[in-house]
Length: 470
Image 1 (cartoon, rainbow, N blue to C red):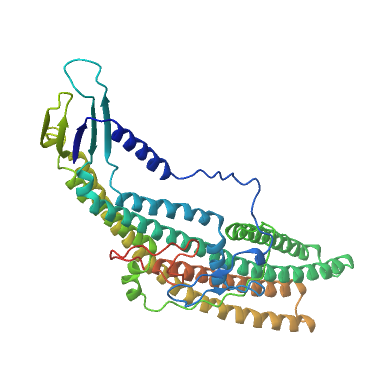
Image 2: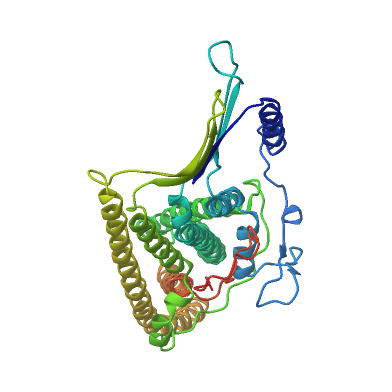
């Protein structure tokens, strides 16, 4: 919508120009330089980490994780969310998304024009001046749909970032779990290696005294070499896990801390009700829903944008001969070639693509949850058999040690019995470890066991337009 006025005096127009410039400069933001850091910000101990969990809907007050005692696997996951360096960039992403919402609520600035003509000669009797002001109509028509699209995209960013937090927490929990089981596996291997070393010492003395054939000594050397290689591999894997966990926590790679032994995993209960409701809890599915809502609004914007650009104006003109005229006017585009066909087709295709992506993610989540549940049931049955085998092999090892003490069993066979018991215990530990890892993954697939609200960044509550995240 626009209008124009011609005036005989230029003083008022000059004042208007000056005021417009003052208001424009006054509304500008200032520049504040922010130099990049010159050194790393890795912390040297747990005490220097952010351990305060903010208050949310499920906890009436904030609480602090006690880092002076051994941390549970879940507490390690929460610390990773609070301190992971990569998650700190979420603040900028959230601010940018909310800025887009603010931008969508704003209408384009009116277009102002000014012209002044000094009378230099001719039949005229006065100088002329003209001021015009125009506003585009289409953004007014599409504003509501654009705001809905931007708001949905902002919520999509929040949900996507919550899903990133969940993934970071899941990774940290799994690393803490692996470190705990690495410690137990290393302790078992060191114990077995010490038994083999003692047997090697005794066998070496017997060979030197001529009381044992040299061929009976070789298997002990082979067993010791195999266990030393296994021990070296376990220690290296534990070192890598510690370094990866320290990186998630924003700690120096040399930092170590106590991790409480994880509880033994239990077989999964009936999960079908949880699978059916997982879409209500999983942030990645919520993010896809918000993305679909944004696409729906974009389709509406594209359809509304089919209306041709037009403006309405009223004019009041007074020229240099003091002739005055007034009347309405309209300017509009003729929709002969461009009726926003491409925009409508593109937004509709995007909406259809997002719908297919949501269905695929929903199917993948259900399949993964059911698959992990079946694996855990199989592992639980195998673990029960493995623990029974451990008890049997330990009982045989005790009998073998008694027989060896009575001189009824040679040392080589005793080492075989003890090695069998060790291998059975190591196998049971591996099954328990795999089941515990699957339990963490199953919680993630079902949207359980993690905070339903963001911890790394606490955004202000968005306007309530329905379809809240969680």
